[in-house]
Length: 131
Image (tube, rainbow, N blue to C red; front, side):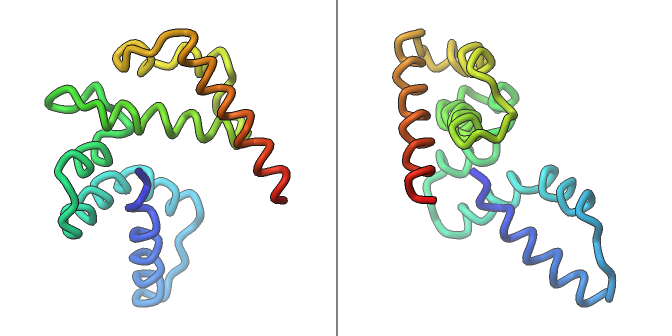
């Protein structure tokens, strides 16, 4: 879902060198936040990947704004939140994950969420074992 971010970083790095300037971290983060979805969608289209994947990347941050229902964007949105939760980035708490806005549109029930959260715990254990 964030395939556009490295492309933007590379582009910004080239731009810094060409203009002999140094962008501050906040500017780089803001540019990535604003343009990574569109950049990723263009990249996916250029690779000849399915339109459904392009649409999922394009709308992953705001699936409700997609011109038509987009399960891929909703799953990507939820998956990104679950990944941040599983990796302990502190952006999401368990109650927030359970109340995530994509649960109902994806027809996920509390027992489905229990299973997803168990996988998060397994991911966390695996990461700690590998480090």
